[in-house]
Image 1 (cartoon, one colour):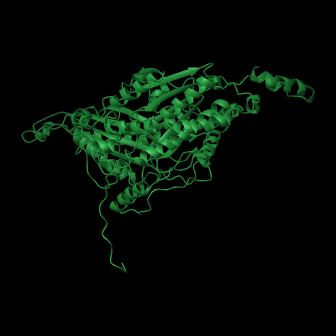
Image 2 (cartoon, one colour):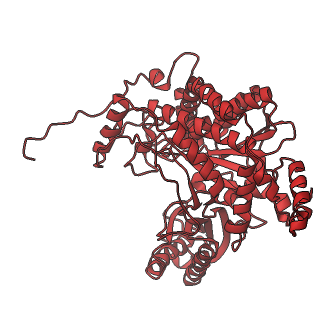
Length: 566
């Protein structure tokens, strides 16, 4: 029945019986973004269809099935850790994951959205509805190499990249959950589609907006994203993250002999430095909530040649799209002023990446939160706590170790509360196109600085393995809720349309002419990959990556006892 006709059935008491009769005939369907874009509202009838009576039994079974795949979780986590790839260069990760999923019956597409290291893995049964997309980031951090399980700085490859945020673990959460749910769908004839994908170059904020633009999620009903943390949980509403625009300003001047005839040159490097200095003066007069930072990517070739080209790469972060665009406009004015002062030309402004501040679905978060309570935190042993406390002491943080409790209350708010700025994640672009949540799973250690070698040390240890396994359980249970409880999807789209996007409409930061900067990090990986290859994990020979590396778990510094009274 068409939704408008359905509503007409209830306009008078007289037609109530007819309406109830029609209600019983309404099929269990989900409403994809394409329908909502046409103004179609999911019928209220869907919200009244009860959950499938098989649900609780299937969820109990899924918990056991995920638990039985603990070894697979460990292998995926350790394998991706060993590749230690940076954004846009995640080719070993792509090869390994897509090979695994293809063997499980998923249809693979590589090079998605013009990004060579991107991919999707898709599997459908029956009507194919609802479609659930499962995403997680895969890229590492420059100069974050460190031996896992070692509670002090001890690089595997000096100066090399590493998983200093923990993006090696999230795919294990999604893959194992998807394999388990797929098996149940086949056996019990459950309709639906599973779509797995990676967050490419999240550290450059340069992947997900291009996936959205390419239509990767055009048929998706719900996205379950997952990200490493030090707790097990989910939240709804305004995420508290910053919107971000990543832009490179390229200047062009004229070269000259820097000693013989410097007056004949126009230094592009001077323009870059003046832009940076100009921004520092302007920073005093910007909102306290903004975050902005830059690096000089091209400063010239050698000192005795006046640089004819130079560039500076900025991240502009603010609360939302309008404020971030306003910050970008200020940056352009500062750049133009720097060019005028140096008689150079502001040659090109490239948008390299972007991300909206995320907003997450309350109904999906409520369903997931209940599953978090069911699963609970992993059981940490003395070795896990020793590593955690060892690195906390090493960095001068309070040595409280790992948390063992989940939050009992679901947190969230429709609008930002006391927002003061912070980090970003381009899952925000996905969240403004369909109901989305982010599951945090506990594979990292609290009290660490982030984007740092210290954040890598737990990521191929039992801490990461246990945390990812717990995350996979929550993910699998939530997928079953979505597939077997039509009200969850109907409520999610109602919240998306009537609350989240009622007054705010998505428009991408990226322009039609912007393409993914797939060249980023290519030079770094070319330099380090020959050394990194020596450390790739071989699960056919070693039970764990720690065993392959010969690391005793945990390895921490001996603590000197303080004299009494101090």
